Each structure stands twice: as C-alpha cells, then as structure tokens.
Image (cartoon, rainbow, N blue to C red; front, side):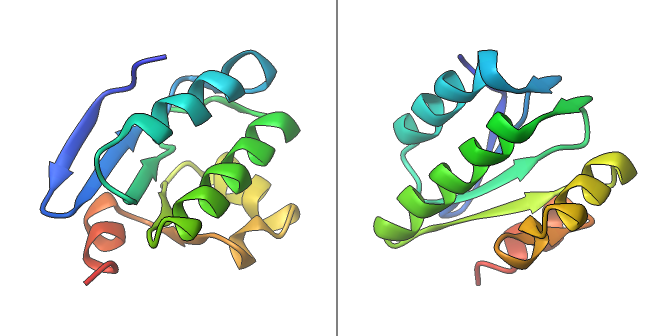
Length: 108
C-alpha cells in the first residue's frame, strides 16, 4: 500500500484510503512503519468504510508510534468517521482534530 503523504517539519500527514478494513489493515500498518517520521497525522476525510479491523489497525499504529517516541493523530471532518470513533470510544485514546493543520500544530 502506498498512500499520498505530505511533510510538515517533523510530522507527516498520510491520507487514508477510501476503505480501511480487513483487506487494507496489514498494508496500512506496514506503510506507516516505512515513514521516516514518528509524528503521524492520518487524514480520514475521504475514507468511506472503516470497520473493526481498520480501527484495530489504527490502535496498532498508535501503539507502535508511541513506542518509538511519536504519536498518531486523526484529522477528519467526515461526520460518519467521527461518530464511529466516538461510539467505539477511540476518540478517547486517539486525539481527533477537525483539520489537518490543527493536528499537525498539536505536535509542537
């Protein structure tokens, strides 16, 4: 898996795929492990399907980045994805922002 990314100083923004589920989870985790930065913002705005395996992948990536001294932050204005993160209470484990810029700024 290769996702579009943008570099902002010591942070990288990765734009998540349209689907983040069982078929994409392993590739997503592997992709994030290849990034040269440990401060990662995941933009979920264009993700239309996010299932339990995808949510597990988010937690796995979050844990790995934290072990390496970094963090994973989520940026999305997609109301469905925000609701999924709220219902599963992942919004209490992962910081969720309304904009990529706010998420990137939170690392400083």
